[in-house]
Figure: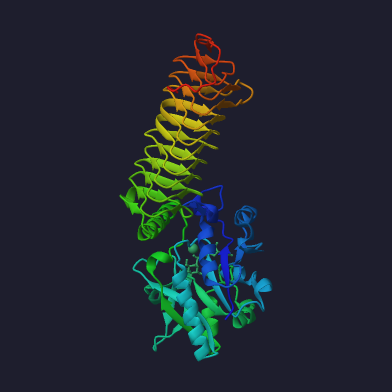
Length: 460
Ligand code: UD1
Ligand code: CA
């Protein structure tokens, strides 16, 4: 059975009170609608069709080729919205699943079981027109009511505004998720009558099917999956639920999460086995953590790759690569383009931007390296600063292998410190330092200039 998905996302989402289209509000680093698209990818066997209207250009730009877009030019109701997908789906699918871009909690398993139910019932009887989910809840506000006959068969859905007092009291509700027989859907979708509200209700398809002697089957859905998002309060509630789902998957895959209530991991993040997340950790965007790493407490890592056995403590790490066995913090800041080779140690109050630190570099206290290249096993003394910006342009600092930078050294870029060289405490280095030379003072000059022997200083 060829199964297609139609995702309705043309509504304006006024209650979000936002300049951003509702379905693009982020949830765990993904736009809301991307959760539904992912669900649809897992259920259908073809690219989902997204019905867009409000903010369509932004939605298209963000989802790119993950969906096929059809435009609903006028918001004339859910039936009209699905109809916009007819030209692209006719002849391409046997079953059509309808879901919503503002229902990110809906799980693929739930929709798959709906599709399976439809497939079974359709095989049992060609009269089966559709399968739908229903929920029972005490607060029915805003939902369409599911009306059944004396035999318990679903006969129609009545929108709240159109309910009789008895219908209004019904607690079996319509979450709006259906799996339609495609042929029947396309044949009948155009016949929905215009409602008093001036809309074409997709829900009318249920009554139409029954009147034609077709079958409608229903199955219960988990209550917390079908809550649509209309306000930012709903957004926060959904984020909370999704956050636990994501953390649970990591825990089951071997990651220790010490306090799930205080741990925030975006949907796309990957974490290796035996890594530990301490309280107050936020892992965001396209981030990857190796095995046996310890992250936290209180650290934020964004779009970065952290190797195995790394330790990140009370630090902020953005657009960075940390190779295996590195340490940073407490209170370190790695910024865009920082790259720490294996075993680099960065202690408190260090900042690194757009720089490569080769394996074994130590930078223990209060230092800033920007636009620098630092060779293996260099020691960066406390308070070292690369003066990389002259007010107009950025300049590079190159530090050779085995260099010892004394405390409080200022490296005025562009500048190069040759391998095995040393700078004295408080040196202001304005000129290149030859290899194996000791420079001191302001501006820094070679100390006891002696002819260079070519041997490497043992103490470096
Ligand atoms: C709909 C159902 C109702 C159900 C409820 C569950 C209908 C007529 N009613 O009501 O039975 O209980 O959902 O949440 O279907 N949309 C479009 N184009 C439109 C209209 C809507 O794309 O022209 C999209 C909206 O963006 C939204 C979704 O469809 O994501 C639902 O629309 P909404 O107007 O909120 O329907 P409800 O009144 O909630
Ligand atoms: Ca709604």
